Image (cartoon, rainbow, N blue to C red):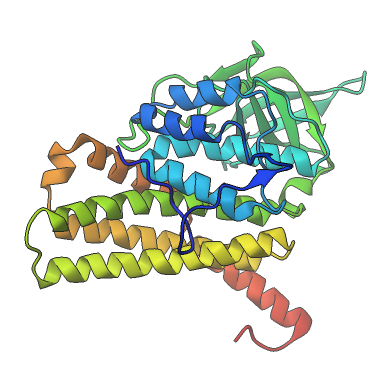
Length: 353
């Protein structure tokens, strides 16, 4: 399995240091765990829970290095990346909230909403909070130790920190029939009287500095998955004398990756400068998602059904990336971008272009 590091710019990857120490002590262990995962998150979970130091966080001067690590892990195994990314996102959120990290833990971020079910946070007479109700799309809830969860309150949606080992937490069993991310179930969770700790005020989760940064971190994982698809495409072209169509498919895939890498590198600089806003995030996520979808299509057209039916690693990666990309909401995300642009024009006048 290919473990070559992924970079957004030309040259060798930068192994940054802090005060003369390695950038993150668990980095190599995380990379090695991605090789062992093979579609199963267990190896990555054990590394994350075994790390004794605080995880790195984005928008703190090393965002490009962090996103390159996510992309490198995703190029090796997308389930590994899908396990790592929310863990690091939770670390970033807690850091922004001024809350300490808990060693020996693994984290998810459960913020999806459902039109048919709701999770309610109720304040008890003693001042504490408990969660009751159902939360959809809770990836790995049965395997993680903790999560950041959004829930309704009388003041609006609010973020809470919970232990997933509490007996009132009941992840759904069965029903996860996806062929992509097959061993990373993302079903609903029932909460019954689960103690929770609020993280900042109602509305903070969506309005906080860093929400847009976390969204682009997911796009870095999509990009890494597409790099893995590209590497297979390149090996396929090298296995025989490629005709003009094979060369054209390879060239287009390279062009799409180069454009996405440039966007991610630019986004990392914006994040570290505190300038990555929602408009920029929607643009970057949309472009990267489109490029990744197109590379999946190019791979199928170029190599045919053979690798999808006989190559375990490639077939799993293609299925995993197809599911992961559904975190982008396609035209609905473009509509959200359009609304932001219309609102800005209404406030400031003029046009974005």
